Length: 176
Image (cartoon, rainbow, N blue to C red; front, side, top):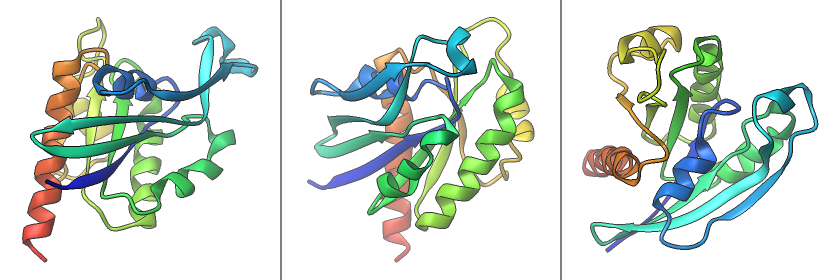
């Protein structure tokens, strides 16, 4: 079987750390520190370098690298993107003002390496969550790009997202 590097990115508070923690077969290496900026009221801790986890799905080993969400740590984004096989952009479906940030992240990570990606609309289980079409429209995601629901705290939901990204990788590999 094969191994793949998957980068999980998204705006601040979109659920990247929870996504990696929900599925990892190993204890997640996390670089969470107390929030010291104006974002302090949103959550207590933020990722400052990366979250790292590993999971075996259908015999393949996926190495998961969660990026920091705050732009002051954006220097890590390109570093973590090295040799990635695919990336996932998490959108907080309850935070429509962050949808343009999803657009920027898609464009940025696409410029690093030409790999498959999808957008996972996280927090779809919460009141006030935008519908998938509203996330797609708000983040200006083209119709040929997968936008799918996700609940980053639920292993089964994260698994579905990862299986979908694996399908995209296999389709790209078959086209080579």
